[in-house]
Amino acid sequence: MYRHGDIRLAIAPEVFHPGFFFSTQLLLQYVNTMPLKGKKFLELGCGSGLISIAAAKKGARVTASDINPVAVEFLVKNSEENKVEIEVIESDLFNDIPKQPFDIIAINPPYYKKKPVTAKDHAWFCGEQGEYFSNLFDTLPCYINAGTEIGMVLIETCDMEMITGFAKKNGFALRCVHSKKNMLEKILIFKIEKAI
Image (cartoon, rainbow, N blue to C red; front, side, top):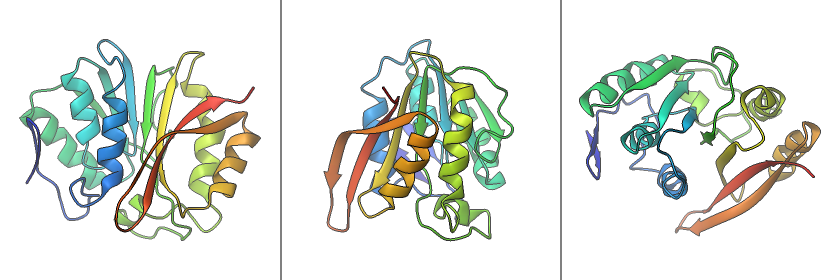
């Protein structure tokens, strides 16, 4: 069990734990700065679903997706326990999410360059050639409109040249809007914007 404010979550061992890693907390802080009430909100790769539940509690119309079926199963239960309505979809990136524009998209991606083998691996590994990011930026245009806010959390040591390259190829730019250093690493929040 994990608590964050008035949110209580049961977290399976196969799911990325928001209490052990700072990336979820930092992305949640960023999301909380936005006006969420009535907004169409997508958490892509939701893991524990902490961010989705927090957004739903603030009045957002939330869709949450994850490739890990255990994460999906637990988020369905956790959303009921926390008395919020969330559309939960098992999906590899956007594959099974109906095409539609979202107002806000929050992404806590895998960023280590290794091929994921198990469902749990998908929380950490983006493929040997960064296939996750290639697919992300290829498909992202189908889920945004001119005013969509997209926030993504990364660590300083990931392959930023590769990620920004995939973004640029699809007409996007990454702008760092917040960073925080802990004892192990520097975590960065990027706003993904249409390149000018």
